[in-house]
Image (cartoon, rainbow, N blue to C red; front, side):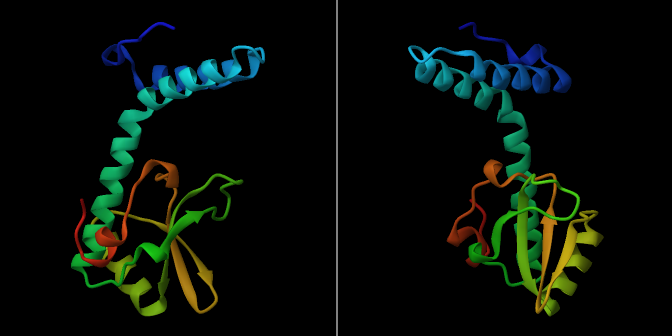
Length: 149
């Protein structure tokens, strides 16, 4: 398999390459299937590094903003969420009680971050459609100790 220089790739080139590689996964024989799939998945991961880094940066920024505003954020509050009109696609969702929801939306909107939200009965969920749960890492320390690694 050829190594590709990523510096010459535009965003559209990167997305097209990811799609083409995912399509190739379906065309292997049983003999070489596992090694080829692992090779393709590694190539996809390398191609996705810029968007994963950006998603992590956005997520860390959101955690810091919420912590600084005194909004109770715990890793237990974050989960994979599929909101309205997402058609099964998932993103990062954060469950908040109503008082934290109001504070969170106020401070996030001031920072020009506009999450979507849904009413969950007693609680609210805010979700960030541009951040995939597969692209971010968060730990108990990041959320509960007001520190982001």
